[in-house]
Length: 282
Image (cartoon, rainbow, N blue to C red):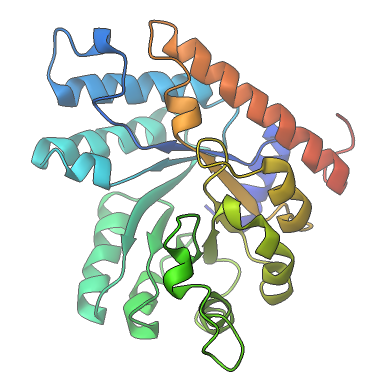
């Protein structure tokens, strides 16, 4: 998916919502697990959540860890989930939350797996090993690298906010350096929603890049603050919500509850797009 196509979807749906499919067998409604395998229950849950929220989302982000934990059958569920999205909702931007990144020939194989075999739109990549570990993911037409920059977890302070780089913090060095590797048409950055206070500074460094922002909802990030300080003239945001939507209800009404939660988030996003002047009504 191109940047222009993604932006058009955001305007058409008045939404920049990404639904994270971090599906935990221990948290899905028990009635789904009564007469089938864990893998079938997860796939059924995923399909239902996708159907319930697709009207209000522009992206889905399955987290590989939740599927890899189940072994080969879990990876089959991952594949069947993304094929379901691709076939039923081809306008959706699909992100593999895999956090890959290794020496060049290994990264080349990761890129081949996700961009050729799975044909996913984007993959999250860790930058710690530097340029040669990230470059193999570039060069695929209309595919994206989403580079970890400043995350929401408590441990982000261990390295990302270090100031031992000529008074610059490590995440700032990552943002500045990575811009030399690729254009705004193929590179995004992960910025945690709980780091909204840093967004003004971040936008000075990367004014035009899209940002994937997890951490709104269960992790306590503010959608309004993220939008106020992080939105640019092409929106420039994909705000992810996982647990808040997936587990809005643990009962038989889980699909309706997920849909209502997604709708509420979309309505708040529509308001932010209006305030930014990207849509003309609210």
